[in-house]
Image 1 (cartoon, rainbow, N blue to C red):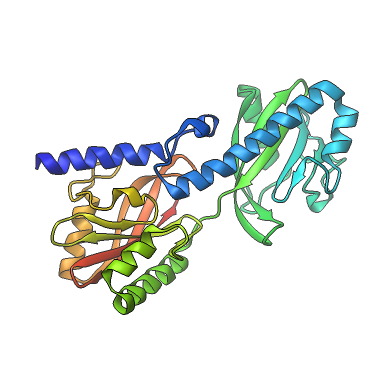
Image 2 (cartoon, helix red, strand yellow):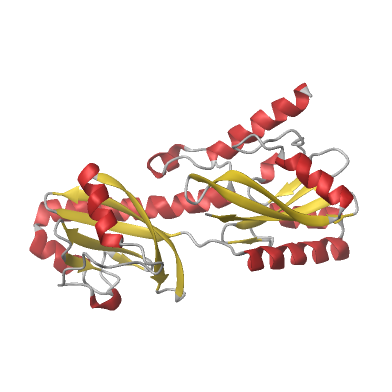
Length: 296
């Protein structure tokens, strides 16, 4: 029992490393490949925001807004671009050039889910000069509506923003990835499967989805696409953020029914928030394979 508690504490600490705030991402240990990818996105957005703020402060609004709106300019980098909103909701610049937003008051603008994006941004900026807002927006690079986080910095009467996308895996995508992992393991054997599941290039990660494998007999990780360094660690005693013995439930489900779903609450490395998570699991001999997805 003591060993289980110790393993749970170690794993929880390792998981926490994957959700270090973006401002400290450069100093954080690489505890999670997926978390590291997300932190790299946030860090890139933060770097572009800092450059934009500095440019605005040095060159003034007129020159800065023209530069931010410049297609193919230095402030448009694929899905990363600068947009600037006045404290009255007027859109002064938008490198994404979506819906012809520039030059109009967009205080009533809503995201793809109906959220009052600009009103929320203005309310948050009123309370804090720096921060982050979350919403659903079209990613012009892949033409998909995805979760997006925009970091903002208030400069006088302007709010300068840069966002980054954090796509969420669906239950259908999670099931598809699990089926793929089960088929691969049955065909290629344990050793090759665990190596592939642990590798970022193994083909078993997608957006925020990854495959994990746990021994049914000993409760130890065989593989985890999120944190491959945890392979070999006993995790039977691990509990979720609400104290639920999630791994024990997965093992019992695998033993009794062979497959199913275990629901729990867990910190999402992409949003840095505790959210509902659902792990689809399936037994393959003495190993349970799983893929979890987040929902709000």
